[in-house]
View 1 (cartoon, rainbow, N blue to C red):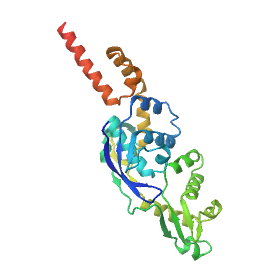
View 2 (view 1 turned 30 degrees about the vertical axis):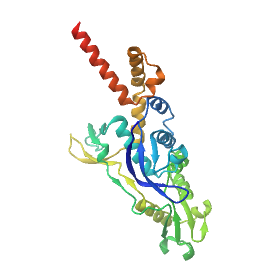
View 3 (view 1 turned 90 degrees about the vertical axis):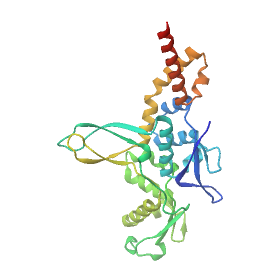
View 4 (view 1 turned 45 degrees about the vertical axis):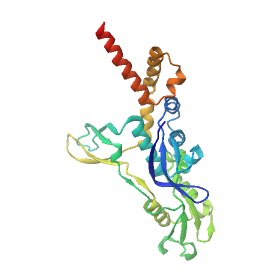
Length: 298
């Protein structure tokens, strides 16, 4: 099936130090929809890894894209791929119901936007590793030999590692993330967890700010206004929850489609489940038109 080539806002660095940015997506089949909709929705990071390994046909000249490779993709690249897959699976338009957050209003409102309109910022500099010099005030003991810090950007593997901590201890989750991503402090390669924990809060803040500055970014906070009171507010768009929620909602519809096509065309379940959703829907529309024509001609 023909794919759709595009370019990652960050990119994947292979073991030889080559950067791969162009990617090609396929579409999810009925079998993919079924498996993913029944997966544990609480393990969002792992679910993203699974869906990307199924839907990304290639990144650069690397094919196939394994689950391990999907884990090593940058967080923003994973978000971007999921956005593109959402476009291909459910279309570009997103509709959502929400409530006005202003206490004096609180009324229900609807909003809609296009996935393609979400701002995407490419990495300011492309590199597998980044370095910064901490300010002197960030070092508790003023040790100049520890001022240079080298780090890599967070990946899907890091998301999977910290996901269980996020709901219960966000501070500990952030500490674990730094332990995984900081590669060198001064002349010390792969510093221990204790050495990273000893960094001052200012040092940690400077590292986090530099990570954010150099990383690619997908803007998932949308500005809208309440149609009732007219006041503006920001709405966070959780692409993960939205995408997988749509898959779960469509599971009953998937089984209805399989039954309908099997009944009329006498195709096997495996043949129907191998089709992407848009192809199943096209056959259903053709059948509906033919049944209506026969009914009118009777």
